[in-house]
Amino acid sequence: MRALSLALVLCACQAKGPNGGVLDAGPAPSVGEATLRRLTRDELDATARALVDPTAPPLALPADETSLGYDTFGQGQVVSPLLEEALLEAAFSLAERVDVRTLAGCAAADDGEACAARLREGFARAAYRRPLTGDETDHLRALLAAERAKDDEATALRTLLAAVLSAPQVLYRVEHPASAEPVALLDGFSVATRLSFFFWAQGPDAALLDAAAAGELSTAPGVERQARRLLADPRAGLAVERFHLQWLELGTLGSSHKSAAFPRYDLQRSSMSEEARRLARWAVLEGDGAFERLLTARTTFIDAELAKLYAFPEPESGWLQVSTQGTARVGALTLAAVLASHAKSDQTSPVLRGKLVRQRLLGQEPPPPPGDVVVSLAPPTQGTTREREAAHTTDARCASCHRLLDPVGFGLERYDAVGAYRPTENGAPVDDRGELLDALDTSGPFTGAAELSARLAGSDAVRECYARQLFRFGFGRGETSDDEPSVRAALARFRDGAWSVRELMVAYATSDAFRYTRQVAP
Image 1 (cartoon, one colour):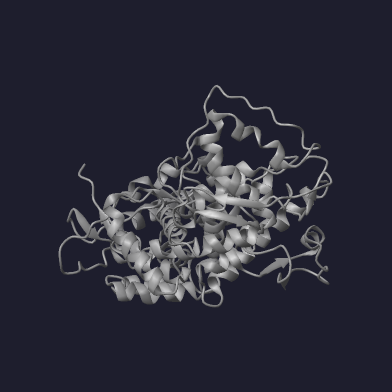
Image 2 (cartoon, one colour; image 1 turned 30 degrees about the vertical axis):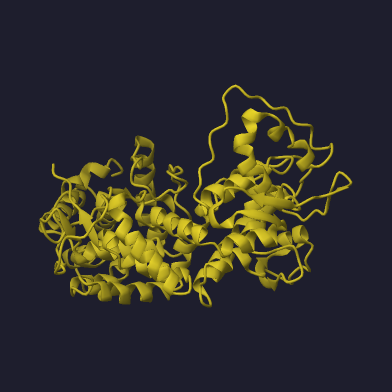
């Protein structure tokens, strides 16, 4: 039974899907070339919970590769033999968790054929994110007949369910244009899929598929109505979390380790990650969703572990939202997750923290270090980090790069390698004066995390960088010159919407780059 392969339904993956789009009038828009995208591990988990069992544990799948810090990029998302086997095992494990007749909505009076039809027309439509083609329906009928010949009805239906779950139509986001034009509007079901994964990190719900079938996604206003509905749904939290954790480079937090000087770190890592998730959801999905909330929020979320780390009163149980007015906590840059992820195992790292600000917030790429330079720093038990890092600027070969990094990271020096506040280091006062050099509209000296965060939050350059980072994550590719009209239009709506992240997301969803596709000649 488990010899079933992903290639089993590959022929149907290449069939043309139902079209539901009508080309807008006017010249062809300028859009970049999209790539075939595979669902990420998180997206597959969310899909399994939505389709089969809300209580299903995370699937046992290998980690995804990343490009530009994001796991959504289509390029490089290959299906290795290891992943293929893991996906197949996961599909059968999911099928065995449920009663297939109940999942398919079969009535007691339904015979095997009627129940199988319900599975194809209802469950498979949701899984494939569109109605099945005739070839796909025939293929699943033939598969069920073959399984019935060697197994009982319940086992045959479970195999059919596993075949649907492991199909390329589920694993890949295959898109279909509504016409043969070189730049064509996507059909309604392809737009629905883009919308659902952009806003929910999972496939479309029935309402979105129905909107696609009715042709409501063939216009920008129709897309916007659905985009705002999806944003208002609690399921939007996962996509918001995923983007912000990857934007802030928190992917390795769960597997990182610290020295014996930080004995509670292994107990704190999951709490750190959860705090970052909750802050992202709160900043974007509650209130006005203004971008500056991410960097200047005077609120955070703590459990008992983080209360100990932050020297806050412990909540009676679970998680608690608390005010950070009058404390050292202000926005994302002072989250323990961010500070610990950008530090060494035994000490802080102004270099890593400065590089985070340069690359992910300012969009600047510092020059690579010379290959022949080895700098030996004093051990962390001697002096302050600022004093030890002085070697970076005394060597001219190092200074050209480190002058852009270290002075930024020095502003976060009052937080140790796990993010705890420290006014002194090795008995000496911590000097957290910093400077942003050659940093566009943020250039200039500052003191401490609060001033740094406020400077960045009010920067047009940082807002534009953030918008471009969201494009890369959401579209699964880097922006090209052909995408610039869409990016610029989204930036204008971002600005006109008082820098609301939700307005930026809606702007991207209604953009030409989102609704159209560039077809490549074979």
